[in-house]
Length: 181
Ligand SMILES: C[S@@+](CC[C@H](N)C(=O)[O-])C[C@H]1O[C@@H](n2cnc3c(N)ncnc32)[C@H](O)[C@@H]1O
Image 1 (spheres, rainbow, N blue to C red):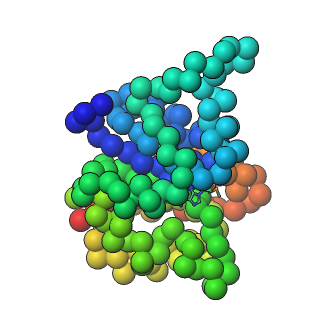
Image 2: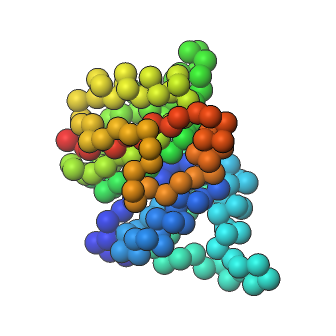
């Protein structure tokens, strides 16, 4: 899809958000990344109706990156992305594991390079430690401006399995939208 806006989702889990987005935005080229094999199987199985035979063909606007999204971010040309989604990332709540968090000062230059000026980075988290962490890290991120912060999922933002679990268990997610300056 040459010339199409390019969106990337990091860690799509069961694939609910990615599949809703590609259906709602056929004009967008969407790359969905996930390192967990069960997640890949879950997304692929949703593409094949019960009783139907798999053809192996993906929807025309979807590509899968079955590896670490950071490697793809590093390989993309400058300003290639129009939108980046990071929904309910693994929180790594122990301080000694903080370096594994996707939102991290060391990773921000990688995201800033790949996202075009004005492009959006959408982040959601239900984990109180990660929520504070996002606010702290992003407050010091000169390349990004906060566009919105909500405790209810904004319109046009499909839900995920992980979000449903958080709500069932009484946690309040935060949904941020940052713009690349
Ligand atoms: C807590 S789950 C949330 C899944 C999904 N976004 C949701 O909201 O239901 C986080 C997911 O991110 C994946 N993940 C973590 N780091 C990743 C990375 N660097 N690249 C791609 N996927 C990653 C994990 O395998 C896991 O499935």
